[in-house]
Length: 390
Image (cartoon, rainbow, N blue to C red; front, side, top):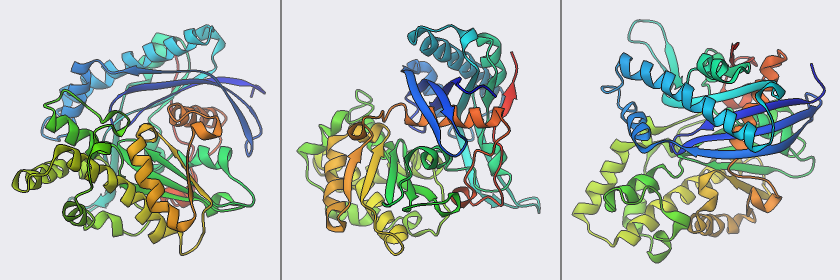
């Protein structure tokens, strides 16, 4: 119940790059919190750990011993990340009130299945909160999604913090995160919590990363700044095939992930490429424009019939891909929508999601709901998070 709380938020997304850790001070009111970023760090996963995490995305590999081991190993890694960002801020662990850790998603199945006669949707995030609490000596909130998943789709979660921090009275804005998966939050002018809606637009960096890794034999894991794609031309024949993906037309609410746009999806693209050889630069330009298309198409399909947006604010790793941003500007220009980044607003694309989980952890500790049911399709707001004491 302190007026000012110091909270570490941690996040690792579908790109599996590493752990983003943000230390913030939170003050203000529940409806209008004030957040001050004190320090931010990204700690890349060791290559062998990243490889083992990727192996868990294939159910046949995700045996209980491997999942259990990685759950505790990531707890150790997250604890080190938390202590490191605290030290970077020139502070000590005893000065921190709480840690909020999203963990690493290894499976997300939001559409209920009924093989045993009871509809069940489920999600799995690893990175044991009890280990983080024990190693840091700080109360830790983790495993956020399951509380909303019991009543909704458990995603997307970040729109909760976006509503608190970004809403405007006289403008409709779009907040687009481009991590492994792309997701859009629609913030109507003067929005109340029930007016906000959000959804996954489709692939973000995931396919771009997978394709460049494949064509370079693993020498590159992402197209730095879009430097390869910028040299190519979009192959419309391939792009037209990719546009036929049914997910783009699926009704809201909807979420997706590596289960859909992961290895199997990329293999189909590479198989087409082998049968229809085009320059590597053209292949990268095409899958980069696919992400831009999926975002613009989502705006035209789900937003424009109700709201005219003034701008789309891009965050996540994709905001550093200049070629992707250029494609987005070309596709949004006809609608009069400006494309900007978090940095254009004086904020941090890297820290945005980690800050979101700091806010959610703060709400959890105070017994406050930290979801937007209008976004996740849940029947009611939930207080997400499981609390581990040191």
